[in-house]
Length: 142
Image 1 (cartoon, helix red, strand yellow):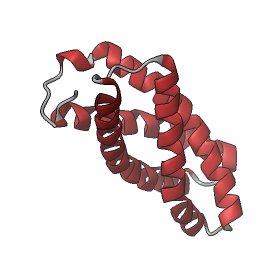
Image 2: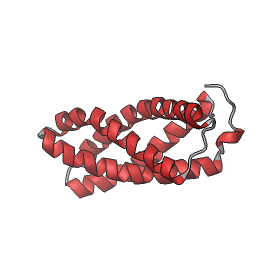
Image 3: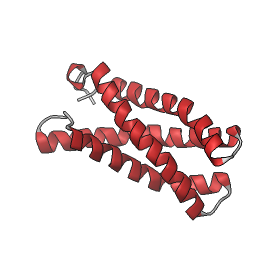
Image 4: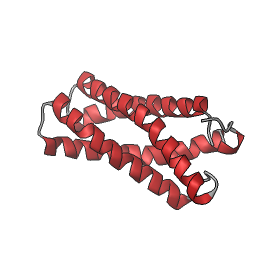
């Protein structure tokens, strides 16, 4: 199980790298000013950072209770990424609609695009993070 310090490093590095990639990409894709997209991405990243910590902590505890360890197989990594993005989408939808001044349906479509990007990114990032910082070497404090 990962330490609190390691979980914070993981969540922050995930969000910072994600912001660097997603802000210009989505400003271009949705034809909105970079500032508007950047603030939206930052609001989403802030909420996602908090949710990332809580979700991963809960997921690891569930894995440990269910399997006796926190090692993730490929199907578990896919489940992890999908569940995280679905729950995050539900949390961010009203924020997207409010900030962009658009309908909930339009915000849902943008939210799906963000979720698709971040789902693939989360899968690649967490796998890479696990390779760089294996959970077995992390301390067991939570």
